[in-house]
Length: 532
Image (cartoon, rainbow, N blue to C red; front, side, top):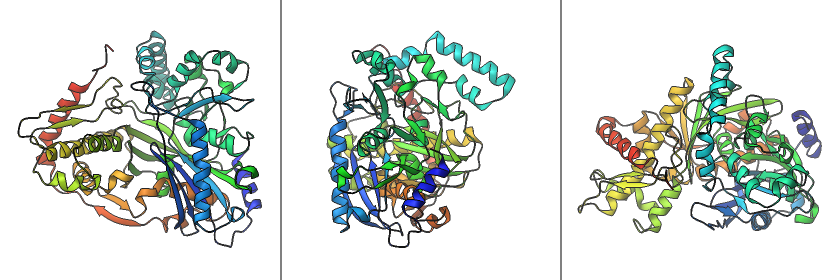
């Protein structure tokens, strides 16, 4: 289905929307899912939320029950509709934002999953990652691509010359699934298997098993999709022997994907957006122009830079991704990830470093420094620009004088240091002039942390009033554009509001030796699980 036909179908369904819109935005994160009902002005009319139950059958494994997740999504949407005081028939459209790369396979005939969702934080494939990254096959691909880039100067060959597999991507977790689920590979070759991440599974279920699709933002994040050729990667799939007939169709981010089956809510609803959470929050932040950058501080830290109509070929571990597609126009982003941010703060709360996460800023400010304590957040390894799946979380430098306040400050400083590493990687690699930094996610409510981030990078950081729901707002924007609620992105810029700007203070000279000592701690945390 082309982008133009998507929009045309949507406009026919809701031609000339003049009444108040009721846009449902479902946002599925790592620990919770939410359903918001938005009006034309981007205001939330009603909401509902559910806690996502993560399953950890073995150390390093992280799963979700796909049937339970679907039931929770349906219940959440139903509750938000009722809370808004509207009928299902009055819902304009529905959009879904998801944590990316949480993957599943299911039977194409029965619709029954072959296993639980394997989440993006799961590390069961890390030995696959190590094996493939040191293999002669991958080294040959890297070397051949380097030669091709020398002669052609094509960016995709530069990207392939430093190709490395990482656990957060789907590729080697899917290979693990095909290798370890009995008869699954044979069934896949026989056309009996469908693969998808959360958005594809929910679309399949909501449409009554009629539509197997994803969008460009979710597809390009898997590691199985080539953002340069804009297609599922024959090179990667051929390299690791993954059958390509199991993949979903890839459709524009904003457009008609299908309609919710009437049996679900009693009336059909157009599904007009599927999008990855980081693309959704970037769109909600109105980062529409080249050089716009946003940082989401949620369970993980995600820095995304708008690179326009050209993908960025990274040599330091930034991901060249498709941010979104509207109509026939693709927008690319370069993304850097640090997987442990909110999850680290949650861990610190669980072990009793503090009683309320809202107190962490004042606790950190209650001491002048960390008293020589350094923390390295690496529960899921260390991502760009370090790129070490075998790194371990580390607390070092403690003495009898160390207090909980010192430990709390060390944890917050470590998050700011990771941000500095990612930001400088984006700056040095892309050579794109950066316009501003916009920050969102639950952790950005910590003023001590965000101010330190501004100080360390010497950049103004802008925080929105809608920061806690930025992915949902972006999803509503995508969904509403598809059916004519808003004419263009200029109308959206009036909806996104600023709460506060953090201006950099001259503290770098104080922090310079602290940062370099922290880098020593990082080096000590690396390759800890090498022999496991």
